[in-house]
Amino acid sequence: MIIDVHNHPDWHHHNVDKFIENMNQYNIDKTWILSWECPETEYDPGYNKNISPINQHNCIPFSNCLRYMEKYPERFVLGYAPDPRTPDAIDKMDAAITIHGARVYGELKLRMMFDDRDAIRMYKFCGSKNVPVLVHIDYEFNTGRAYPRPNYWYGGGMLPFERAIAECEETVFIGHAPGFWAHISGDDQFDKTSYPKGKVVEGGKLIQMLNDYPNLYCDMSAGSGCNALKRDPEFAFWFLNEYQDRILYGRDYFDNQHQEFLATLDLSQEVKDKIFYKNALKLVPLDDVKL
Image 1 (spheres, rainbow, N blue to C red):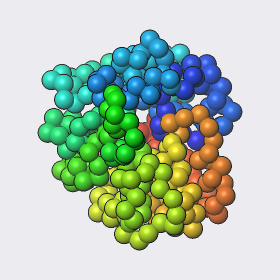
Image 2: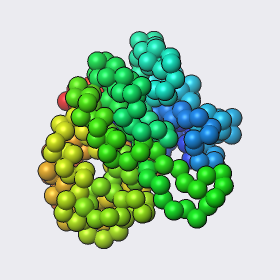
Image 3: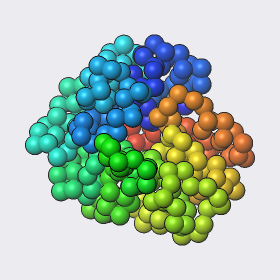
Image 4: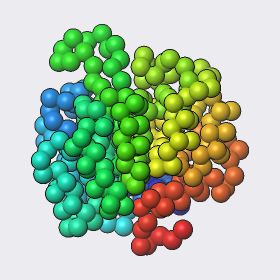
């Protein structure tokens, strides 16, 4: 079995039927279908080429996730992440859980520090509902642009994220994106490039946090997650074995690079099963699937 814990509706020119065809092509049984609701002032307009034109002022709204769920309820797990800075955010999330069956708070991708006090309240609410929180972290890279913004950071980096994890011990957090995965290494590339190269250096912040916080999990999706593993296959083999209980397979796209890379490593079937579906089921149990 394979569960993709990170993908979006109407994303990269895939409507719902094309999405299902792609899942079938790569033997993916279920997908966590995630919203990305972000103020227009906070998202890079470069994303507009990847989303439906009718949603370009609201990124990836929850309504699109619901539409996918309604058509193929057996193939999707519902995610939603209202902006925690809005006064009714917790009420919205509560309604999404109780009315629509939302199981994941994600994707949280905003230009705010992830230990924002209103965000902390949301995380604790999610913890009380056994709903994991999936976040995107990006640093301020030098893009060479001046307009409309010189760069698009999200989350404020690993330090605010660590403070949130430490304060919300009963909440499961899932890290993702360049600003998260670059910290697999102890080098200084994390705030300089989205896809660091070279052998992993001892002392990575991510390793320290995995050792310190049992409520932290890793979403290997997108180029950032795959690059973090591919840059040093020997280290990737150690990392995936060492933290086999807290690594989740995801894509955030429609290619198969993660499965293809994992197939090059001599991982046991037990480890692969955990990464591909058992860890996801541990966090979000499903009535129609048993561990």
